[in-house]
Image 1 (cartoon, rainbow, N blue to C red):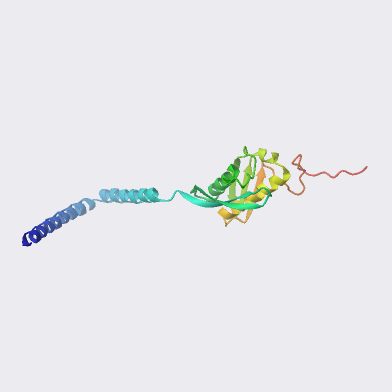
Image 2: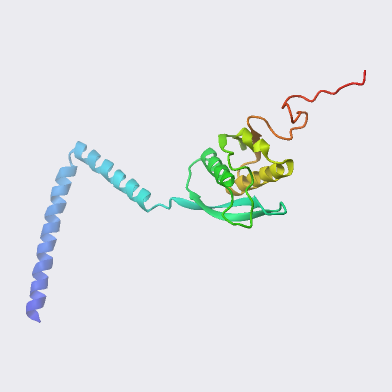
Length: 190
């Protein structure tokens, strides 16, 4: 028993001497300013790479889709993590345009509709989708717009107002002729 304890004591003593020697060498190497800078840059790289490697790259988002009667229902979906309100809004809008996973829910827009542009300024989001969205029936289009707005509000609660345009024109805008996209001209009976 004494033999084992003596061997363990010698091992720990040798390990202590090796660690002390390594510590002295490291301190002498770090005393040079260039080496210290290189060590700090390496440490920052290792920490940031480790954080990136273990980070969660997906997050849950609540998306809304209409059912057969036109009532909106939420569907939880895993979406890639995105940075910034514009990127997040564009991602959520694209996911809504992809349609629901559930067979009980209907797509909000025709399948060929895509996100054209996203702009966020001072609590207001401007979202433009392709003009092919206007090919949907008026009731389906209104429901799709509600589903899009509700999904974006759920994903980005700090947005105060969403301006959704289709091909650069705001649908159902008061004073616009829906067929021409221009001002409504009142015809007189002369």
